[in-house]
Amino acid sequence: EIQLVESGGGLVQPGGSLRLSCAASGFTFSDYNMNWVRQAPGKGLEWVSYISTSSSIIYYADSVKGRFTISRDNAKNSLYLQMTSLRDEDTAVYYCARTGGLDVWGQGTTVTVSS
Amino acid sequence: DVVLTQSPLSLSVTPGQPASISCKSSQSLLYSDGKTYLYWYLQRPGQPPQLLIYEVSTRFSGVPDRFSGSGSGTDFTLKISRVEAEDVGVYYCTQSIYFPRTFGPGTKVDIK
Image (cartoon, rainbow over all chains, first blue to last red; front, side, top):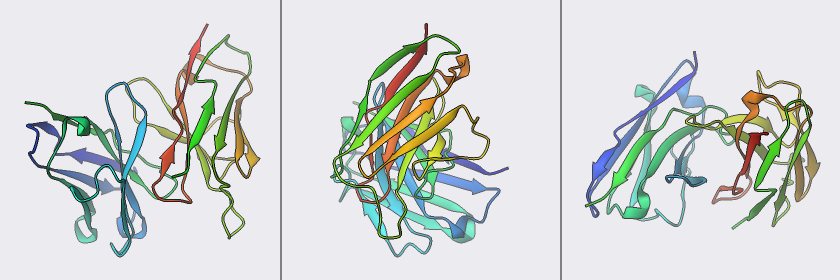
């Protein structure tokens, strides 16, 4: 079964850091570009970041540029999002999603930034 | 950034009746390879989004044939031929030609 499982979310104070992980299974992870997409409570979808198969191409939304870092470890079938200088507005469910078509999504991990 | 506009933003449909959602893009989504990279997703309550339609009109694996997509360039439409109770949720369009990747605001569909 093709599956993406996010982890690492939690409650963090403004200015703090978190590292999200996304474990992939059921497909050849190294063959697929990957994305992080988030959804603030009661809001729509916001794309956060993209990484190519070899990590050679990376993009970020302006809202997170300079604060978030996407990475992947193809040997471990894992995608990561290092989040620093967190703000209240980063509070959201964070999803990892496969390819440009976002054809497979995880269940999401919740990040709450609050003092 | 590419702006995607959806209409209507909410829709209440009688089961068995058709429904239609429009997605308009501020720029053409036709790429140099001849493909148009417009996608449709359904997010059911409490669930992650799921891909329904890719490249304007191709149904993703397992998607019922009551869902269809059409359009070109900047104007696109998702149609549900006969709405069922399980179709309740928020429908999003998105494009993958340009970064940043952008989504429409979503269209909430419920059952009368």
